[in-house]
Image (cartoon, rainbow, N blue to C red; front, side, top):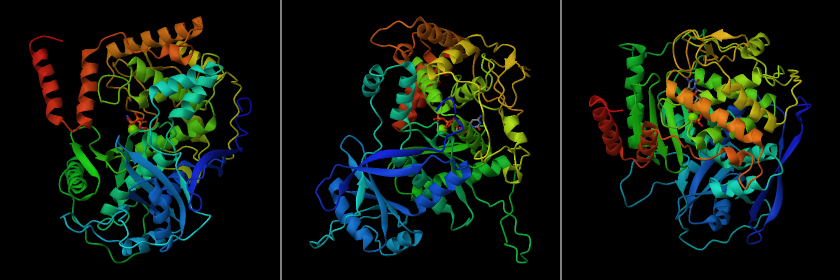
Length: 552
Ligand code: CTP
Ligand code: MG
C-alpha cells in the first residue's frame, strides 16, 4: 500500500450488523460495497447533499419501532436504508430513513401532520417524530428491510481506545487503529448534511439558489466523531444567465459589505433561534474577523458554526481533502498528531492564543511536502496549481485565486518516500523541534525557504489567501510550549522503552505546564456548551480586573 500509493483502486468492505423485519433481531453480516475510486470533493459534497434531500430523521420509541416505521414509510415511498442513532444517557432514539427518490420525501411530508395540543411554530422540515398507531396494524413481511445499527453516534471512551492501542503490534498499527476508532462515521456524516439542509431549506423560499456548504473537518477527511460542523451559507448563485430580459427587483444594499453581512447574520440567527426545530444555544459572534453564528442542533447533536462571508474555507477543505486522498498515510498521521496535541494541551477548540487544529494540520502537510529526508510524500499547492484544467479555475469575488487540480484520478503521484507511519511521526516531531519559527514562515505553496514577512510568533502562510497568516493569534509562549512538547515526544518515542503505556500512549500524557488562561478557556467552553454565558462573562471580567491590577 505504501510502496505504490497510486494503486488506490481497491474495494473496501464495511461490516454492518442489521436487524431484519422477519426475524426478531438478526445479527447478520452485511457487506456494503463502497469503491475506493477517487471522487472529487465538490462531487462528494453534491452526492451527500442529494442523499440528505432523500432522507428524513424520525424520533422513535426504541430501535424496535423500526419495523413499523419501515412499513409505514414504504407504504408511501420506497425506503433504501435506515440508520439508528441515540442521543443522551437516557437515550432518545432516532432513525435516519433514506428513500430512493426525493419525490418520496415530498409525498411523505404532504401527508405528515403538526402536533396537536400545544402551541408550536408550524414549520416543516426533515425532522419528525413517529406517533403511535391508533389501531393495531399488521406489518408487511419483507426481506429487504435493514436497519444499520453499528454506525451510531457514540464517541469511543478514552479507556476503550487505550486498551485497543495497547494491544497493537507496532506504533504504525496504533496510528492506523486510532484513525479507525475515532474518525467520523457514516451516520455522523449523514447527520451533518441533514443539519446543513435544515438551514438551506429554511432560506430557499426567499433565496431559491441558496446553498449551505459544509466545510472544515466534517468533510475534509480529518474529522473525528463529534466534530463541529462548519457551514458556509451562500445566498446567491454565481452562474450568470445573460440571455434573460426580465430582471428581478431586489432590495439595494445600504452600508459596507461587512456591516450588511453582520445585519443579515443577525436575522439568520433570529430565524434559527425562533423557527428551526432542535436548534438552541444560538450565539452571534459578529465582531470576529469572519462573523459567525454558533448554535447546537439537539436532534442531531451537532454543534454548528455558520458563516456567510467567504467561500475560501470550502476551497481550502477541497485542498486538504485532496492531500488526504493522495497518500494513505496522511489522514492517520494527522489524526495521531491532532490527538497528541489535544492531550498534551497544545490545541484547544476554544479560540485563544494557542495553535488551532487547522494550523496544526497545515504544519503536518507542510512537513510531508518537505521532510528532512528530501523525499516528499505530498506535492506542493503550486505543483497542483500548474496541473489545473479549465474546470479547476475558481476566482473568488475578493480576488482570491483558488485554482488547483481537483480531480486527481489521472494524476500520477509518485513518491519515493516509503517511511512507515511511526517513522513519519518521529520525523514530524524532530522537524518542528528544529524549525526556526523566529525567522521562517511555514509555506505549503512551495518548498523554498521563506522569511517571515512580519513579526508574529508563528507564521503559516494561508495557502489560498497568501497575504494572511493562519497562525496570527499564536503567542510566543505557545510556540515555546509547542517546541518543548515536540522535543519531548521525539525523545520519548525514540528512547523506545517498552512499558504498559508504550508507543502512541507514551506521548499522550496530560500537560505538566499550568497555563491559567488556557484552563479558563477550557472552563469557558464547557460553560458555553451548557449555555451558561453569564459565567463565561464573569470568568473573563475577572481576568480583565487581574490584568488592570498588574497581575497576569
Ligand atoms: N479556515 C481557513 N482559514 C483559516 C481558518 C479556517 O480557510 N484561517 C477553514 C479551513 O478550511 C478549516 C475550516 O475553515 O478546515 C474550519 O476551521 P476550524 O473549524 O477551525 O478547523 P477544522 O479543520 O474544522 O477542525 P476542527 O475539527 O477543530 O473543527
Ligand atoms: Mg471545524
